[in-house]
Length: 398
Image (tube, rainbow, N blue to C red; front, side):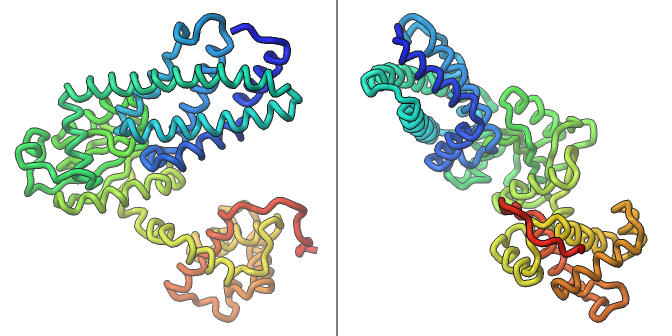
């Protein structure tokens, strides 16, 4: 495509868009908002594809020759990956078109800000829209080709059984289908969900986790396994995170699978890779399921504190360490690398500001179990909330 000097300026605008991480995040939000199926995937997976597709597509668009002759391998690979992750062609197209429309909208805004004449803008946009249409067709072609390959494999049959059991989008699998997949209708199975989303790793990792029997496949873009026994340490890649539930009958596994999905980010925050038992995170999972109540508790208990004040954040971190270490001054001090008297002082200042009864030996310091849980929950919610922008509040340490 022969571009005028103004057209070259427009290309510079597009390249600046590709390098803008906030814009990529904007396109990811648009895609996820329009496609519930894609929104179920890990956000990082969608972001990786958007960034790669944007950069590769822009490089190809800038090249010479007819668009139909250019390299659309990344577009076809996106379609294939989404097919392997169980995303329907309709769900994929909703996401692709939402991202495409948002990208064009932003391109127009930035081109006008760069004082590119409307005539040049229209010329390049028409060519860009034609190019994006061809790219979209390659995404569809990649998805369909991958679907055909998967449909011929036993692995895809297993995926269909898993999705019917765990998502409820289809009729429950017949006993014959269960038997072909290695499952018994009367059996009890552990549900395992791993943080593996890369299609290149899914099958190999799944075979290892299900080596003792059961079935492995892809559900909502993640490796999912139903197994009669938990896998041994050798079956889990050292860098892989797996959440495993206690064994349950097949009818119970849909609800158990939802809990495992919700526990994945909690397990990642608490200890990284390896095997995590779902029940180990039961308390955290139950609290996380009530974000509105958590915010109300934090505001009621710690209302006078200012999230943007570093000293207030230090007080909250000290109180959490004190609770996490059995309300032992010496243990909390060791964890914070400060003197026990420093912990005592901070707890007293927190009490003066909020009334929180954590001063050792002070009134109300003998907390019940439920009071301790409520207080810890409020402290963590306040700590984890994003700090507002702007100048900090007054220094209460003075």
